Length: 175
Image (tube, rainbow, N blue to C red; front, side, top):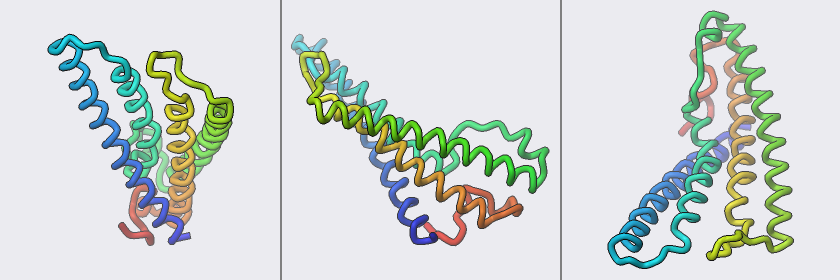
């Protein structure tokens, strides 16, 4: 399982880098759109659509990286008051419920992606982008998020009641 955790951790980090690149590309495309539209007076066709899809894609694809670094918003009043055993149970329940939700979301996302791909759906804009392209980040990012949840649950199981080894701590997998 440690090897699986190392692979998923590396994959989650790669997702974070790719999400950052998508955000940077979106910023550059918006700058390009402003210059082309307002300085040169040309029409823009694909820039708005690309920037929206890139930002949404970075959200889904970057989600495993956020979980890896425990970067989500959380309220820790109850876990801190619950003590080590209570914290373990809360982390376990939260991880299992989150994994189940993400698995359902990834499965339905793959289904929707496949429909768009097999039917040749396109966006209704002038650009007419194949719709499977903006739909792919949901099942891909959330699918990898499911793998990261499995790793976090494994780390939680390895740590047990020891709060120093709680999820987010790099135990037995290394960087």
